[in-house]
Length: 260
Ligand code: T3D
Image (cartoon, rainbow, N blue to C red; front, side, top):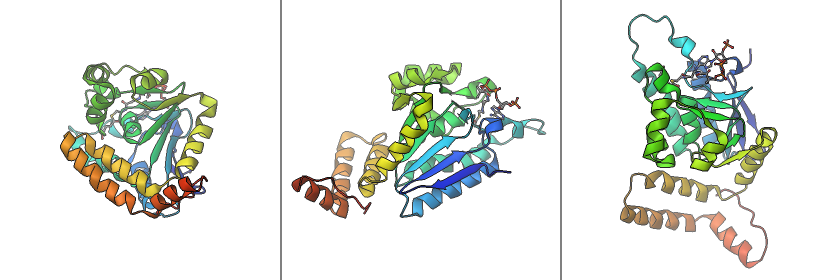
């Protein structure tokens, strides 16, 4: 049997494929464990400077595997699953000091939709759709949904999406600013891989500092954010890649960033 997460190391970046296509790549504990380990490895591997997350088959991810939830005795403690698996996954993606690209190749539902939104850059196939499926089964959007949605699309749309659980087509998601960009189905993989390869040649430390600044901005006031930008810029200015960027500019050539 194939592993539930496929890990492919490419030149400078790593592709992680959720691989339970018969269940629309919904999460069970095995897939959570493999994805967590793969993200940790990518995080510490100096040769990996960008990560691409995609789904196998016709969907991206349908959230929690509900077949694991059928026929259990007594009310379950779903908070325990969130604490043990989903929250650490979202924190891993958000704090990983390398860009994480999500290529949404089909339906992204429940936690699957919100894990996509937790990634740094979301690119979707034209046929993809996003569904906050939770309310249909009496649950609350998790995996950061109630944090990301209002910030990305505003309170009115966030409330309707969460309460109605209607599918949002990829083009609508792009128009609303829920995701970065829609591409034709047949070019999704090439576009996403090209993006990962491009980012793997960029100043990785600088990108990590950008990520840190943007992550913090949701909770900061302007003064705090200005102070943070000053501190992060100080660190960015001390990196070899900054020196290379300025040198390359002066020499009118393409910079060769090493990620340091
Ligand atoms: O439980 C906890 O620990 C709390 C954590 C919660 C996190 C969550 O994510 S809760 C939300 C869980 N997800 C859902 O509620 C989504 C359920 N799925 C759907 O609503 C639909 O499948 C989709 C809208 C995503 C796609 O619809 P469609 O018509 O394109 O496909 P389909 O025919 O429904 O699904 C294809 C197969 O995948 C099907 O299997 P079959 O009949 O061919 O053998 C279906 O059962 C399976 N599948 C889809 N989603 C799930 C799933 N199997 C298990 N769990 C799923 N979530």
